[in-house]
Image (cartoon, rainbow, N blue to C red):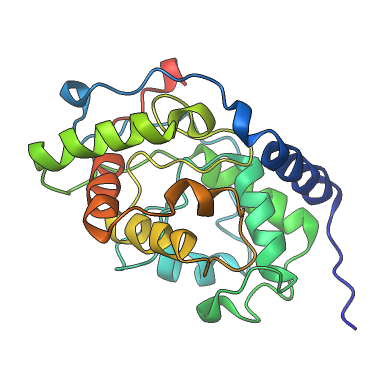
Length: 225
């Protein structure tokens, strides 16, 4: 039997996920982003204070996720501006085989806990690039209403910038958002937070398209996180 060696921050936040699951019926009220304020520009998160650019494993990350964590590859998520704890958790889960990402299988085997903290800190602080997605006003309007109904902002923050173990949705690649939500809805997001499955259950592909577009073109203002 494989022994999964979760580091301290992963153990703590995995426990937090379980507690959040038990409390999912008491989700805090949110103030949704009005559709009128949604634009295609995502503001920088904060100045970069640590860089793993000279690390031997960095070229492997940059090849798919981009030199500054802004992915230009279809289906590959951007890491820039994601919460540090979220990135740490996901890297540990992927390294230990709890979360299955076929394209990354074996890539993180040599990544230590210290390496994970280094990379998570770097990517959490680099600016989020301009999102080139053209805005569809009708999809934004429908997506905003769906997000309000699902209380997405209560966990991911009202401006969808993410926090702690909750990922940033604003400015993420639209194709990746759509794929991820379909996986959650259909119970295929192995090794990921199961809280999302009941939230998305029953939504059609068209509704998920609207949500993905709404989040992808949303603006993150670091002053209002």
